[in-house]
Image 1 (cartoon, one colour):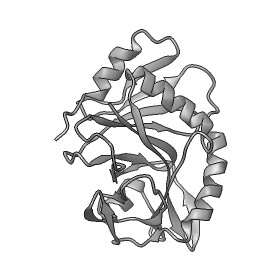
Image 2 (image 1 turned 30 degrees about the horizontal axis):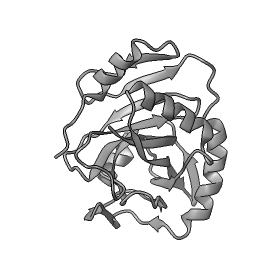
Image 3 (image 1 turned 30 degrees about the vertical axis):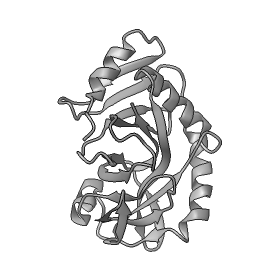
Image 4 (image 1 turned 180 degrees about the vertical axis):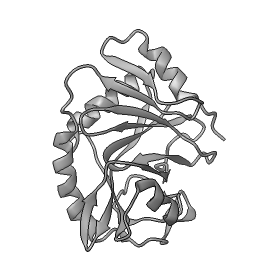
Length: 226
């Protein structure tokens, strides 16, 4: 089992010497994420949003899973509660861990809405501004290896149409890419449209996976091994 690091504390200490980022705790306890907001203007991820939509459309058809479908996550079968396009290929499976009822409640869905998620690989060519923010956060953490980067859009379907959401979050488990050193600590750097960057800790104890909260709407999530 890899040793967990309290990422919030590490980040806060690392940022004391930084003049470009402002650090603020988003709650108490070791599992609380830390919000890292750029003080400079960050229209950053908006450009990645449009390219993400195009990438999603092309990958969705062959990657759609229904609610309750079994997905292999790092060799273990996990039932994902949310239907969607699970198109990421660089990780060993992705699944939403909350029950469908919990997801509906957490996302505050109406009676006609069903949750839907789109997940696909991204990189510096597809999401250059988001990757700039991710690299800055990794540097602030003291360095680390970016094992994989995902664009995740968590929304809903209503009468056959996709509905964007902005409130709530759900738990997601991701199988680490093959070849990653599972003895090391893992965290997730999330960049949202507008440039807000959040560091999320791995909340599970499985060395082959990382579990974290995915916010409603579009975000770029980098899995970082330290």
